[in-house]
Image (tube, rainbow, N blue to C red; front, side, top):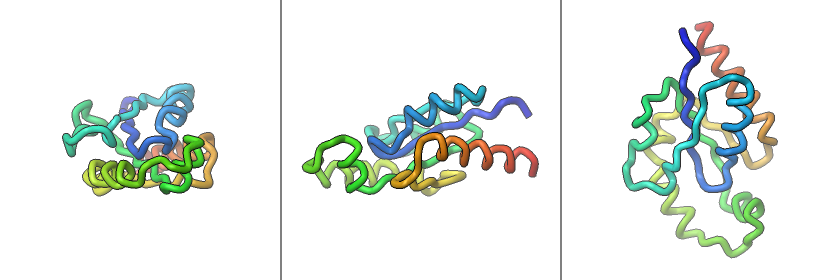
Length: 118
């Protein structure tokens, strides 16, 4: 199998961009999908990824990362709706609330390695 394409989705501030940079640095074909901003429920499928990763983050952690305790809950809820299809189809869902980006990238790499060997 050639290097698989990995699509990364999740809320704002879930760590998508940072994790993608780390994975690309490891030679993995990874890209972030702004699914949380799109009403196209399967936008994540448009580049035909081999693997879909969902990075989860709580509203409280999102507010902490954005340094904005008043970041609107209604936006978070709207993003949840926009992300529902991706979450349902994700190969792996990772809670990023208490995980460093390096640990998240390592989890994805291990998951990918296991999937390839299976």
